[in-house]
Length: 375
Image (cartoon, rainbow, N blue to C red; front, side):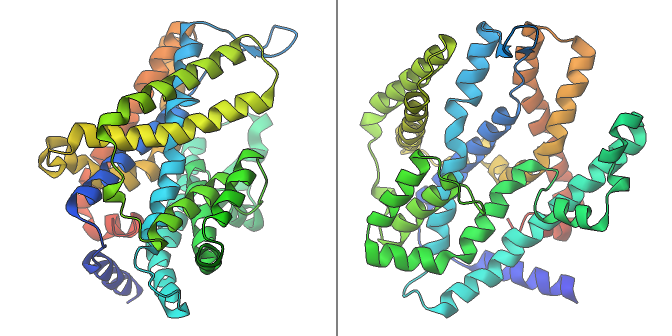
């Protein structure tokens, strides 16, 4: 009965029409898919640390530059984009801020966020449990065996510190959804000042404990755009995308150069990093308009891949980590192999994830919709 009730909720989710046109809907799906690819490359980062030196450091060469440029530069816009889109979509149908509007949102998020979070967290525990049973860990690592976890430790792992560590995004998002009425009325009464306050806490790396300062800022930015009725369709500068793209790349390269020469001013490094994120988001947003404004993305061959965005997000770890380990065993640990593994491990992971998602959706469609929150 509970399973049927879940399916009814998913049907209602599908019927809900968002207040956006087809172009914007396709744009958000496309940017979300490529953002999760960026997230996977962030997690593919595997630079070799020189432990023989007096101070542990990165060996600087073509490998370190490319990995830092991609994982610590280009790809760092992905998570802010996800939170901004989540904030925008969450508040898009909130008209008056009445409690019943939020209660309706809460009920839906149980099926789209909380339930998938718990199921994927349990999957991570089972995956590692099976892996540990097959690989027979050394005695020194016995305390880390899932089978030796206490009930308290196991519940803490599933609910608070999931083994698929990328689930922290959903964990933070659930908390932000819970306090969404506070965010709504803060925006209503303080206008843009609340965004400015959260922006400052992001710059200063303020610790909110229950969620990250980055999550709060960009979720609130998305909420602000939605609550103020700002049509994202009108945010176009397709002929001005190039300055944003060039500025973004220059900032990333400059930051890497400063790190290479051991520049110790963390405020400047942090400022460059976070300015790069802001400019990078705009660069991607306007670049999409330049490339696809006169094209129907939904008619392209790769559009069908966008439906696997959430599955790819939830599935890619701990698969990616173990693919990297296997590749290191096969090819060995050298600078060139480190770079090749950095590039190829996400490709293998994405292929396996989409193949598994495709098969699961065809063989067990109801279960697939359950673990992806009806997506």
